[in-house]
Image (tube, rainbow, N blue to C red; front, side, top):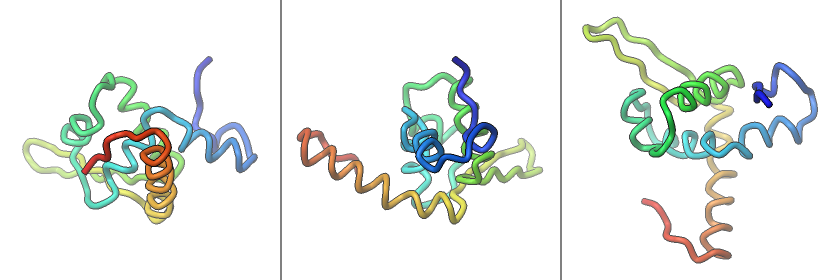
Length: 112
């Protein structure tokens, strides 16, 4: 089943949040962007074991849902940076709370 961005298929708040927070990769991307703008290649390396195709799809969906913003520069060579929108920034404490819950209840190592 092909996953769509929430804004294209439903107005239910629960489905909206699940499409963002419930995704395997999107919370990791949001968490990685919590402190600064990051270039595409750097962000892909931080996120880790994800195919370029799936990674690009997640970025497009987060951009369509207005969680992140993509900024293109005309430098040579060209570069693209991603950062959180105010909506994305508002998600960070929620993601951090979920991580803290996981660390507490499943005794996992905390990332830096």
